[in-house]
Length: 114
Length: 109
Image 1 (spheres, helix red, strand yellow):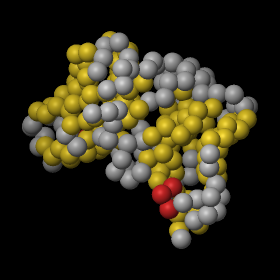
Image 2 (cartoon, chains in turn purple, orange):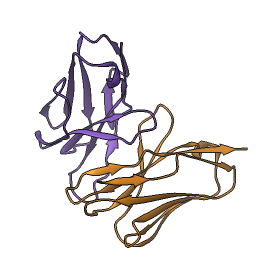
Image 3 (cartoon, chains in turn green, cyan):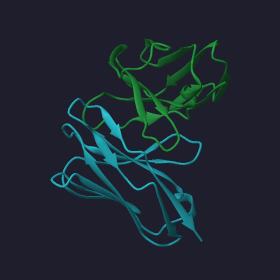
Image 4 (cartoon, chains in turn cyan, orange):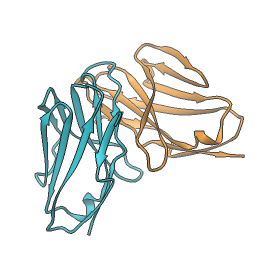
């Protein structure tokens, strides 16, 4: 595997379900990100981890819970979601978090909440 | 508040040139990025500008004017594969990327 991978690619869940999204980066980067992408809206930064420490949490509802067990893996645990949470969830990584640090994105998980 | 503005959609002809504009108002500036995103795929990096002027990379060029809070992405010799969304993002004083909603570029034969 190369670059940034995400699983699953598609997920349909009910509002009472619990599920997790997984992201893995094979680039040796130190920072990882979760973004939400809704149709015709800007990318919304949800969480940033740098060297496995959470450095940013942009007022995300507690029904989204991130986990970063090491610098290569990032999870997003989901529980009691709402239909408005349906979106594309993108994971990204970068060497660092400041200045010129190109972010490399995974293909995303298309989430549908029924 | 922080704001990035870019046109929602543009149409151009294969072989032609198109310019996608981006204006921004952010708290601080640590560079501006352009990304390309094909439908159903991940965004991929195109360019980074932190100083005023033009950066050229093959058929794609990106321009920045910090005093005007303005950038554009110039695509030359358009090909059908250039049909995609183009995302403008500015890194603010907290080194957080603020994203525009993207410009969907449609290329016609």
